Image (cartoon, rainbow, N blue to C red; front, side, top):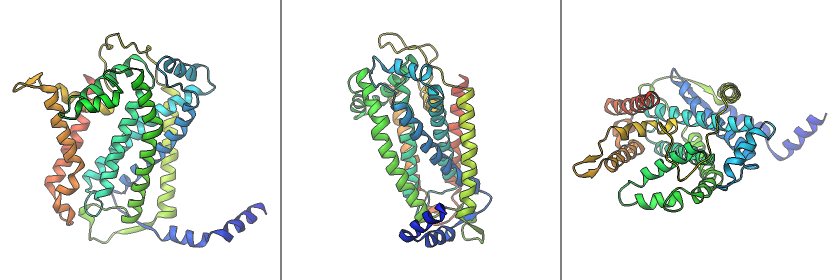
Length: 354
């Protein structure tokens, strides 16, 4: 009875029948590559999980260099289920960034960036960059020696960029070196600036997906293909995959909780064999390929400049691939996509082993 009254209350204000009709009328293409559609939904689900667990942790975290490390230790050891929420947040971040990489590379290889979806590609790429910065800023909040050293190296690398590098490094660090000011600045990024930017871009990205619809590979464009309703067919598949991902994250969080290293000491040398997080390993290994000096120039500066050019080309690839924009096959850009994908995978794998 109460459920019927509640339904009538909603129907007096909102046309549920019309909403259901609109949801059921939305069709999505069904083909052998449709599995890649779900990677975007996985990333979205993990973002929601990160917001929830992050809000819980923010209630107990102290963003001050004298108390940050102790507050993390207290969350893990003294707060009821605190270790679980911290572990859930850690693994959710790892899997969210991994899902975004898979989503981006699948869009690259399937040419989902082609006209008229250029802004979908751009917004998705910026979301990935923001997610990586999320990971970096959250890493420093631990205020342990490995996080301190990793952020010092990452911000120092940004300082090697020509012209604006010094300003970027000073802006990120809040000064000349990594200090308590950097921790405060990264906390502001992590809990305020980046979440707002993420919510805005996710909103834009989802709206653009709804406006343009799901893309199909160039090889299938113009051919007859089956279409299925988004609701309930695709939605229920999304829901099932989200439940599976929740099980994976909970399992990892329970069985493999992240460790807490020694408290950061700005005067101590960096720990031996230190490595960045896995999503920075391909950059880390790329820098190793360059000598200390190239034609009288600093080798690291040259490397970072070349890497920046490669990333800019990747970002603007929809505007270079003219054939795909006209629905034609473009094998040259297919090989470029394969190169980018394999380079990232191989260099990350080498970084793990080295």
